[in-house]
Image (cartoon, rainbow, N blue to C red; front, side):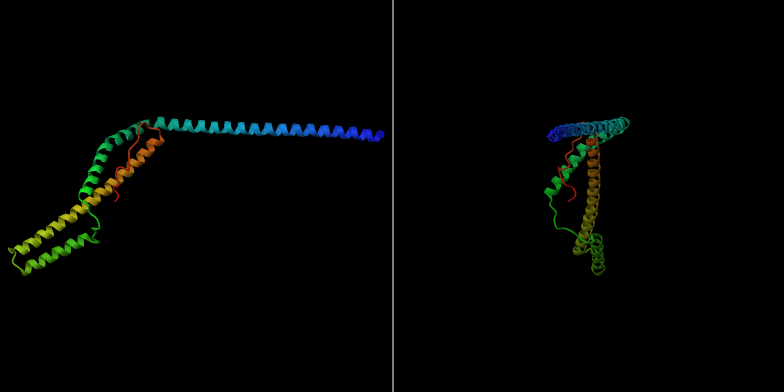
Length: 189
C-alpha cells in the first residue's frame, strides 16, 4: 500500500511538473510570437525610414529639375488644352469619317497624269481642261493638308504622352497641384 501511495504522489508530482512545464512553454511561445511581431514591425519601420531618407535625398538633389518640370507643364498646359478643345470643336464642326485613301499621294499623281493627258488632247484654254487643273490642284492641296494634319496629330500625341509622364512623375514626387485632365479629348482618333 505504501508503494501505491508513493506511486500516486510521484504521479501527482509528475503531472504538476508537466503542467508547469507546459504552462511555461505556452508562455514562452506567446512571448516569442509577440517579440517576433515587434521585431517585424521595427524592421518595417526601419525599411520605411531608409526609403524615406533616400527619397528625401533624391528630391532635395533634384528639386531644381522638378521645379523646372512644373514650370514647363504650367507653361504648356493652357495652350495644349486650348489646342485640344479647338481640335475637338473643329472635328465636331467638320466631321470626317470613312475617308481613307490607301495611297493618297498616288491618287494625286494619277489625277495629275489624267489632267495632263486631257491637256494634250484638248486646247489649254478650254474651260473643261481648266476645271480639271483646278480639281487636281485642290486634290493636291487636300493631300498636303491631310498629311500636315497627321503630322500635327502625331506631335500632339507625343506631347500628351510627355505630359502624362511628367504629371505621373510629379504626382509620384508629391508635387502640389499636378492635376492635368488628359481625358478632355482623345486626339488619337
